[in-house]
Figure 1: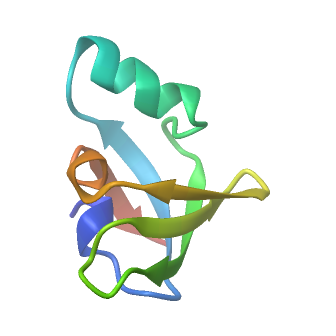
Figure 2: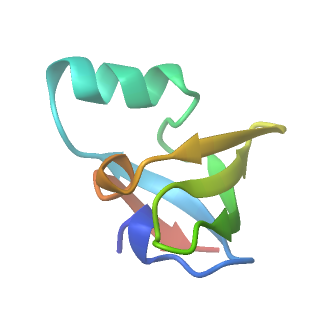
Length: 74
């Protein structure tokens, strides 16, 4: 399952970040790393972006980036 598929109000754990090079580095620079917990707060009406809480701060992630983040339910 990817972060894009997670419902509002769910908490998930990152298992893997797909992608390579600058894309993967940008995602990791936002604090999204393996085994970190992510709480999905809101999803915009058209599904893009997704607002999450990670490491104590709020972050908006584009849908195409959320597809690269593999997660599992807690």
